[in-house]
Structures are given as structure tokens and as C-alpha cells.
Length: 143
Image 1 (cartoon, rainbow, N blue to C red):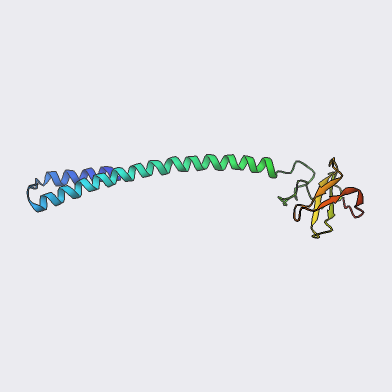
Image 2 (image 1 turned 180 degrees about the vertical axis):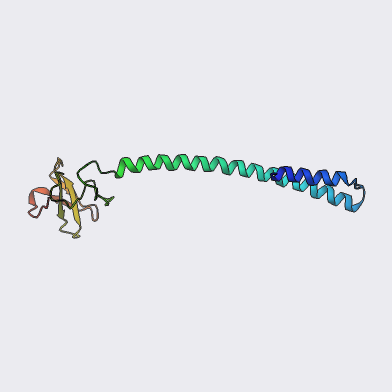
């Protein structure tokens, strides 16, 4: 029995008691029964709204999962040790890895900066401090 059915049951009980609605007690019970009916309808509306929002959130969560996979997924199948979401390369420690990913240290902030061998620019930008690093001047590139 849902809340609407329970409110209708209480209203039916009150009507079955044949209370005189001209007395104070009869007026009170009628007002309480009407209030219960209104509250039950409001609760049903809220439940419907919540159900709709839950479905909508589940859809958004699924869409977000797809976006996260598209953005953060490592395209290189050579290893599964890619945990750094800030890096577009696979950042693996495997010496047998055939990825064309390189790392260097930013001279300004000391952070490791990763880049692909396919980088067409002669300059990369450090994601931490936004310093431009010229690739021609780098001697300490680690593969």
C-alpha cells in the first residue's frame, strides 16, 4: 500500500465513522484527511521527480564515463601502467616499450614534461608553469 492509498484508507475510515462534519471534531478530522490526501499527492509528485532525476543522472554518468575514456584512455597498447591523467603519453617504465614518448625536466619549475616524438613544434609548454621549452636545446631527453 503506497502513501496515496493509505491516505484514501484513512479518509474512508473517517467517512465510515459517520462523523458529523458540523461539529468541531468532525471538521478537524475532515481537515486532517484532506491534508493527508494533499501531502500524499505531493509526495507522489516528489517521488516521480526524483525517479526522473535518478534516470537523468545515470545517463549523464554514462556519458561522462564515455568522455573520460575518450580523454584519459591511453592509446598505446604496449603497457597498462598509465595513471597520470595530466600526460598524453603512456608514461610507462617498460624498457621494451615501443612508444614514442619522451620526458624532460622543465628548467623553471623542475617538473617532468612529457611529449610525443610526433610533436611538430620545436617548443613545448610546461603544464605546471607555462614556460616554453625549446626542444632543440634539450640535452637530457629520456625515452
